[in-house]
Image (cartoon, chains in turn blue, yellow, orange, brown):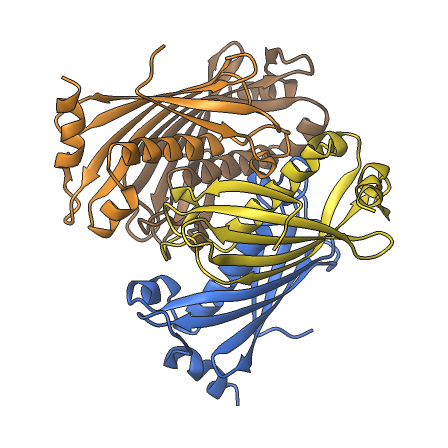
Length: 134
Length: 134
Length: 134
Length: 134
């Protein structure tokens, strides 16, 4: 599968829980960091947008846990961005273990942006990402 | 809506991110803690099961983010357990803000158990939860 | 030992790491939440102060790990506030396991406040805490 | 200052709290990950030791917070290991922001190892680290 963006990671031991595997919630951290680095690679700074009171938010997350990551695992997160409606966009994200390219997690994260008054919209900087790929 | 189990929480400031709201991943912590406390209330100890090499695992998570929780918010998590297949069960979980009973998050967390050899099954202690409710 | 403020907690399984004990960093979460709840009990809202660009910050933390907390442990955090210099104050904090009142952690957290220009000072609301106890 | 080991990091947005800076507890995550990667570089696998019931533990942490890290900051952690007593060793750790080599945090983390019965000792693999440097 082809991805618009990829980011390399390594499991950190504090991310593992008493079952000895990466805790389920931590995958959302990996996915978020990858989204923010992707946005940054296109010139969009999540933290700067927040300071301007434009908040990119997640409205829905679907995560399929396929293979647990454990201490020592190197892995990468792949990302594709798709338009899903007038004010929503989907990040299709997959996590692969480096050692054997096994799929660890498959996710669809649906986002929107909220303006200062909390109304959903797609900011020009993000709109541009869709136009650019046409 | 009726729930089999409810648990009270309060947002802790370290759970909030630079947008000033509870970070998306933290809701999975709230949901997990509620599931484990529910199981404990029925006599099932997640950590003890892990020591016996019976690992309860999440295979899929669906989360709909409705209203962001912020610093100071009291909230509660409601839970219902449903059988979804021979070896899977769903935790239907909702998070409500106490102040105005507004829905903060709606989730469906699908789980199974893995035996020592990593094969999915439903342990007797959990099987019993479904029989008991008949 | 007498404390000005106490807060009850229970270990959540996601706070435990692959050694099966609460991860070292998580104790700082417990201590921070206790400090913020203490401040709130005196009318000081940490998040509200941050919005006013008065940032309460930690300049030094000393933590002595005595007994590891594990899954299922109930515990409480005790707190005393002391003035340590013109612009600094110390939170003396202890964590006790409920079951046997065993000391789990002893800490001294030194804080100050930074104004909008990043200069350390003690805001009136905190100054008042010391005067009040005279 | 010279370090035996260095590790590069970048702040991830989920590590920042409502003050817009990396939360105080997160620095302990950075320090721990650096210690474990250092140990791994010498052939010592923290997770594997835990499975053998040899638990490396922190008995004391001293952290001086110098400059807050924020979203987007690249930084590195330097580490030196010193023997502090018959059964204890100190990790002297510093965090530097890449942009201007400014010191962000200075720490001394004192550790020991616990055998199966919970008795402190220094395992041969770690003892070897001190002998090797003579």
